[in-house]
Image (tube, rainbow, N blue to C red; front, side, top):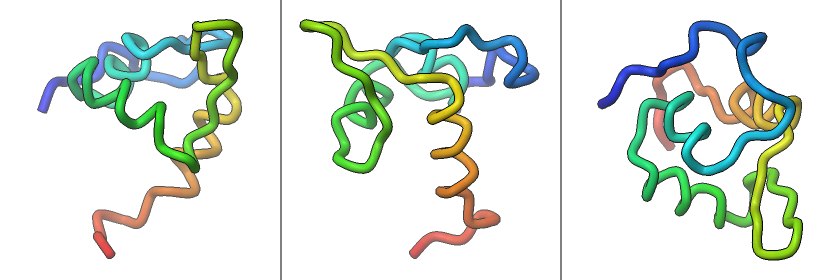
Length: 71
């Protein structure tokens, strides 16, 4: 797993693209692109561009954190 380049949510811009999501989560750009196409992932589509609002991303992380448990 790659290490995140960000140390705090405060460092994030208002909107994140696939490359930024990958850097935050420490995954590959292709994995973040796949994640952004999941039905429950909070994206905003602007024409052909897909971005994630910072606050919705933080909320998604908190809602999907299960203390290391998988189900």
